[in-house]
Image (cartoon, rainbow, N blue to C red; front, side, top):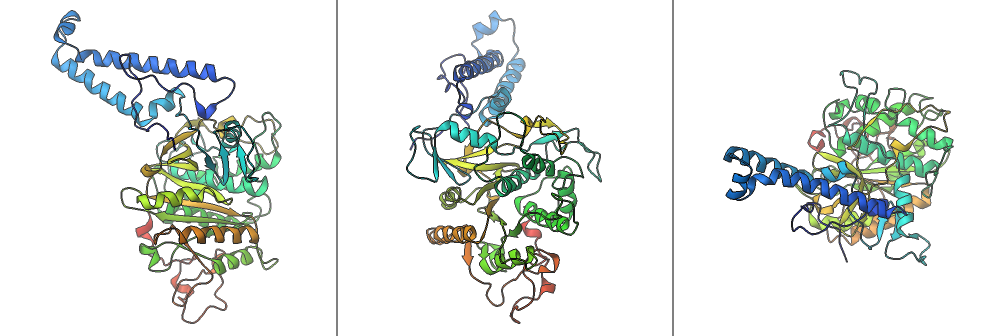
Length: 485
């Protein structure tokens, strides 16, 4: 298979470097010639900058022609040149200039859907869509949540922006927003090309506004996650973020009228963990009986099952992802229930929503935008800041080993299909699965305590099982500091 250019590739200079790939495949359209011109212009700008800083490295005759350039001046110029090259190689300058890496002709798996980029011909597989344009339309329809500035002051601080520290919160908002889009509008929903907007879409966006009145705002998430280390100005890991969502959703369920006028998140939430030993190194365990009890309690005994959101926090290595897990991570994007991955490079969280070859395709929250006040009845509002048409990518083996995978199951059949796929994935994992699936919790293992609205009730639990007083409300012991990564 062909692969994308390496992320650290240095852009061409004005001398003998090779020409760049023309165009921006992430924004491929009829305006390709214009995009090619833009990329060429960007390269010229960078080449000129490098030439200026590199000029201090020329021969002695050149230095003489330019005047008496001191060794100190040459050293400073060379240092600046190295800094600029490092920024460009890391991709930051390309983002600044509006450029993106080119997609290859290989298949893209994006949130459970396959896109054939090698051909525009229709596929016989009813679960697959074909074509670059179809993929880009899907990608640009996902809700993009980024750093914001100018919002209400976050309590216990003087901050009116989350620039530099809120990327994990923003990435998690994107994942949950996708769950809500799938639930209310369906996986096949696409952003309309012009207003008016769908009222349900506006209601979903309002949940993620940047003020206390928005149920899933950064303000409310920080408040809910205090016990897990969330604080304005501080960065946290995926595990703490998943637990924060669990706390916030439980709080909103206990306060009728907060979300969509019915007082409840529209689905059960299952933060998947392992048994007592598994949490200290083993794979998390999806317990079917626990999921069934969560759905039963969510519906207040009105029906046996409900939609369910599964968040699976994982640690897949020490300083980097163990290579044996990469094929398994890629495979999760083929699940129809896929919500992507909350993760990214160390200290820089992103929302990974797809894969191509050995590259992760993601939405990047590291863009600073002005806070937007979304009125509930304004269907003509400009929502362009909540969507992105530029596909970013990174090598899968460079992502932070601390991450969380999300899945949305609409009903019992959908959940059964998820369990079947997950079990098959575990069987093919050569003894190192991402997570496993079991029917029931074994004696001496943990059970959920539904007294807080987040898990199984204690009724009918075997006497040998851990008592609910030993749990923190979500099937885990209170000793979870080690997992706050």
